[in-house]
Length: 187
Image (cartoon, rainbow, N blue to C red):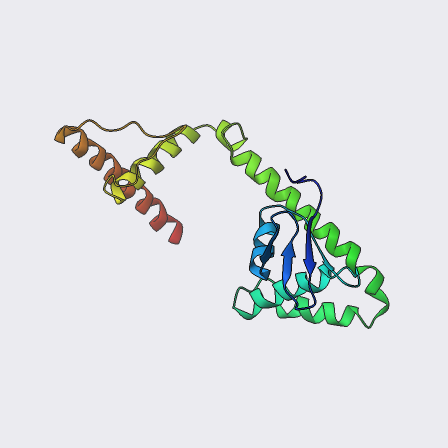
């Protein structure tokens, strides 16, 4: 069993093939990107020299995503990074970037906590009603194809036509209210 707290060791052979030491198979750059997205740290070393090639391969993964149009880094940020290699600020940039990404991770984590079943948003007055309306709307829009389960899921309507008509009337009324509010906001 692999120790998930340790970085996944990838060895690069002279043929430039990448070998996953945990699963004893060859991997691609996309496989490595997937490991990282799944929260795993990765270390890539040259088999012969023992040199750490992790940074080089991570940059290559980023470059490939950027070249496919999956742009995350704006041109001005890339330009500033290039400038930082030739300036006195070079020593400050790594710490700044590391702290910025740490703050981003913390913010995302707190946001997910707030949106969870026990989060602050769920304590907001009217949250359950809003959630039920949203689920009824989705059910109406998908024709009941997308079943909803789990906490906060709207109860299944009975097979009677009267219940279906009532649900549809409620949704239409809510939609009319929302349209009215939107038209008032536009004025």
